[in-house]
Picture 1: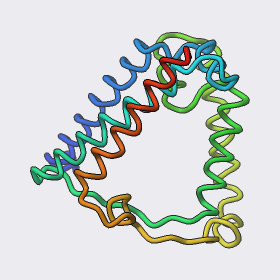
Picture 2: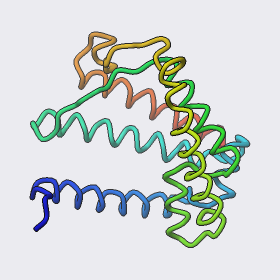
Picture 3: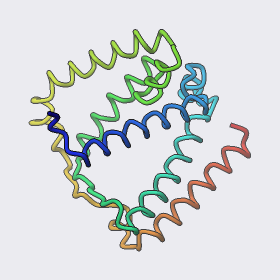
Picture 4: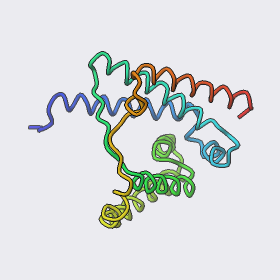
Length: 184
């Protein structure tokens, strides 16, 4: 007999379905294409940033809509400057060396890109292993540097969440328009 609770099974199913839809949309948006990703890194193709910003706007509106209806609860976690720097460096180095981030890597594997399948998965496994090995040192010496509380932007700016969503959405839409007008 399975020990997974019915609500956990539903969560797993919803997570799987969401992942499949996300991967499909990444592939249809063209961001599982190595040339598009390298174009973003070289600042010659802004397809990736357009998709990311669109996803941020959609996610922000969706999360706060569901929160207002009592369907979800936000559980922000505390962080630190050290953990942000280490995470950014690991992500950036991996992305720069391979040309894929974890999400686009999964989509590229799904569409049959052999470089993603062999190089990407090997890189993620090796990177995770190295991180696990050095984690005790990082935890004691770097990850706790510059701790900050678990705050959201509405809490930081002392503004109602929907006002923050509206302001952020307008700024991000203007950013997308500028990129489009400039020709990226």
